[in-house]
Amino acid sequence: MVGLAGILSPIPRTPSREPTIFTSETRNKLELVLAKMVELLSPLSSVSTRTELRRLLDRIAPEYLHLRNEVGRLIMAELSEDEFARFATEAYDEFLKLVMDDATILTDQDREKLCDVIQSLRELLESALNTPTENQGTLTDILLECSHALQCVDMCLLSVLLVLTGEIKYWNPAAIRHLTQGGQEHMRQVEDTFLIHDFELAERLKTREQPVSLQEVRKRIDLPG
Image (cartoon, rainbow, N blue to C red; front, side, top):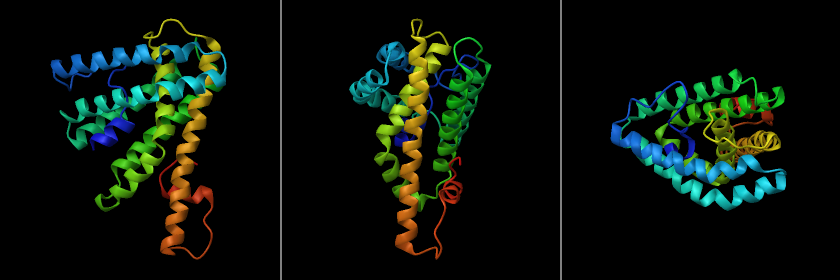
């Protein structure tokens, strides 16, 4: 579960809710990790081209993964699985509201893309939490396979959210467009990884006699169509 928390848990602070479910010591540690994330991600909000964004994402990904894993350890040290599920899904809902309520930074197109990404992450989290114990190994393998794409989704999304909350004060409007587009494209890579594994599994087990459409597969693995 720690690995899942590190990969899919949202950053535990949003404008409308302080993480009061944590002890003061854990809150302080989470704040320190968040400060490091803000410093690490700030350059992403100043890029001018997609090439520059891709280069920066690749460069900071290892350090970002380390910070993400630290978030997961801190969260799961205090929350039960049920508490984590409630905390994480509520945070994604608040992120969605933050994006929907913005009227100054995001374009309509940016807002639509971000909403799709947040909803996809939320549904992926719910699907992962509901995966039977006997299938957790397969799920972990798939998440590891698309972990880089998930990290890129997360870095793009969090960078925009930090701009919206004022944590990142200096940003380039062009970067917001590149970040939202980058987040959407990497989320599609994650979904494609799940689709590939689902088709492979269906073929291996011979569970279906007729071909399965992509839409049907997305529905079966609880990903948006």
